[in-house]
Length: 447
Image 1 (cartoon, one colour):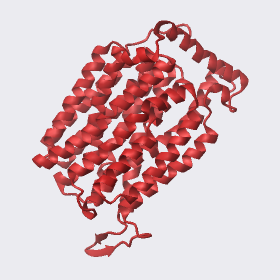
Image 2 (cartoon, rainbow, N blue to C red):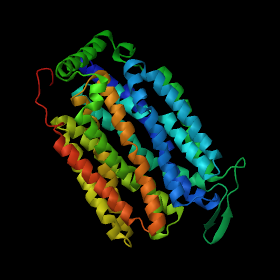
Image 3 (cartoon, one colour):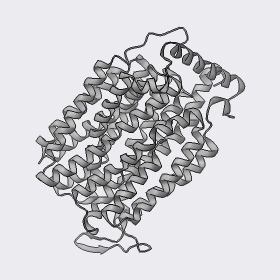
Image 4 (cartoon, rainbow, N blue to C red):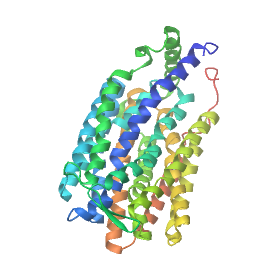
């Protein structure tokens, strides 16, 4: 590193110091909001009144709580302290996630999921805003990709661990012999899933408070020369964009591009969470698979998503183009998901389609989340990111709830799946026509 310029040393240190911690935090966040997809495989068999509609509604109630506090959270990161806010958020959601184990009725389940959304609100947009305090435009999409790959990694890691926990308090047939797994402390396996994944968030919240500097000027691991070089690059970029794009928070909320990006994200989130939270249930219904087999299969789609996010993040920064990098993955996902009902009866083909669908929905996100900061700065950018994420994530309610209702009333997921395809098509059209994210022309300030 001594051969590098102070700016390049600062950029590299920022990657190595910040992104691993943020990655782990998002991994736990993602598990805590989605482990319900695995837990409900046994909840529905042990708790009265839990059918497909209840599970779908409960999955979605998370996003109503999430919606209420997203914008304040992103603004607090810009105006106050990312370190303190993220610490508070993680401790709160970790406690609520663990307490979900106490839910015994549909209403208690709904309340727990809603409170989990309140607890986690502000984390994701807050981190996106936080990264703008550390990474200039040439590095930002790649930094977002390394943060966001925590989601597919969480989907790959958690099912197998959760599967082991689900066995607590159940009977398992091994080689024709039935084995009974005793309950632990009077709690069943699905309860331990919530407890096991909730507690690490509390611990990480404390780590964040002591290890996450708010801005380069607060980083003791940067030398004075490195700190000044990084802050100068960020200030120069803000000055260039601010001269052309400075606007108030209210103006940003009324900006047509912000509103259209909100609609686009709503549509993609509807599809993303609809697929993700119902994939275990779809595989169980279509192929009568046991939980052990399902938890192996659901690892496959996020493995492709992981590669896709890193590829999009790297190539979008390399080419300085974001629009095509956001649209192309969504089109691939829409096409693959549209074919899934036709593959029923052929497990291999079904999994290939779900892999492409999940991979595309995840891969578009690093490029998509670089779009707001391409035409907004400061509080306008922070508030708009919160608006896009909060309203857009209500699609996380619609997708799972819609698939659950469709399956309950028709006995089939097909109608719900085709609606998710339509939703993705709307997202792709909006981003294509929006006029942001085109290839940037290099300036003297950029290498």
